[in-house]
Length: 153
Image (cartoon, rainbow, N blue to C red):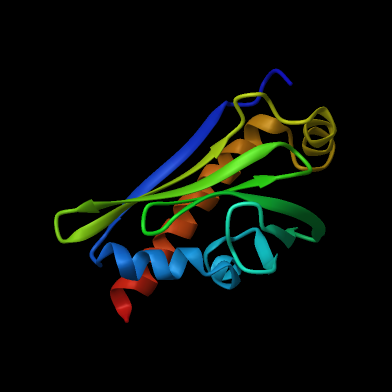
């Protein structure tokens, strides 16, 4: 649907080795620790490409479930999952940066967001442009939380 940005993205450099950062990101049970919107992300079976997850999200007083499918899992490099209800793909990419790790979080919607999702966002979440700003803010919050966990322990 017109109006959605095809790519939302944020990145951060973490003063920790790639293996340590990957261990935090690839453990899906950690997702609620990082994301201000995710309250649960549970995989159905071992985490690999094709694995389904069941998720619970929250924004203010609103809660909603989603499901996702792992679309990429390249150890210490990339984790991606497709949100089945809206057709967006969320990705964490890691790359060495000196003695640390650069992490890029992104939401891809090259084919647009499913119309029902855009309608709900427009009706209940302040409209697509405002919600996309909120999503990027959430990415930055998630990355800051991952950085604090990786550098603090």
